[in-house]
Image (cartoon, rainbow, N blue to C red):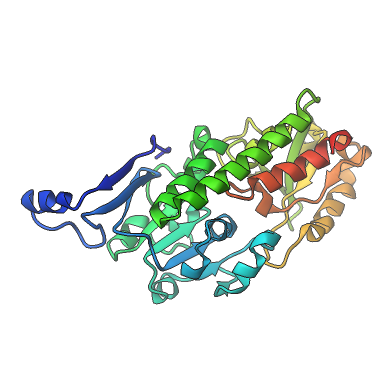
Length: 340
């Protein structure tokens, strides 16, 4: 479901007695007393701060480090690029898998909380799923999906994302809600304050400047391309950086296959790549993708190619999470070269 208004319930121990009086003990894995926050239509309830956290995908891994809970992380998986420098030491101290774990491998770490930067880890289709959130909850494992990626139902993939939920405000809310669940509220507030200040500084820097139309393009091996549609969080990053997504009207999915002719028809002012996925990647590793676009025979007449405005960019910088200020600063420097 699209994200409902925040629900924060600090439940007194008396609630346990009330539940017992109304029909016995709660189901396994759902504490009767504790803290509850609603995430993507699901109540996430913890009796106390989770102590065994599994973080899947870049946004979740970096969120765990930003909130200072690396000592509680029992495993991390699937980085799209190197973590931000300020999290490198913390990440080096975690167990890491370059691909998502199987359900069995995940459960072998005995987690009590799974934090995922993307919703496909819980999708019922595809080979990478570790099971629905409900199936994990039955085992006593609570979970969280980043709110700008809420599916229409538990187990659905990201075709069902509501574009209205894809907001920077929902990223701030995720930080605060996770701070509440993980028992690090003060740290979460500091993280949000820093994010807000950096984003405001970017917005001030580009205020009043012409807004270029930017296409975020991934060259495929078969000669086709994928572009970031309007429901992808990069649309919000571009907006903060004073630019517009040239494919914002395509909202059916985050990543949309197109032919070269569609990119030519839109003739974006700037093209960014979307280079992925290796935990060792830096921005320099995006340059080959940029060069493929610059030298594509069909793109010689594109404005972005003619004017030298095709730039390497990382998929990691498209994501909702604590990386947003970094990504907005980078995009602003690429699309507004006169306002660096």
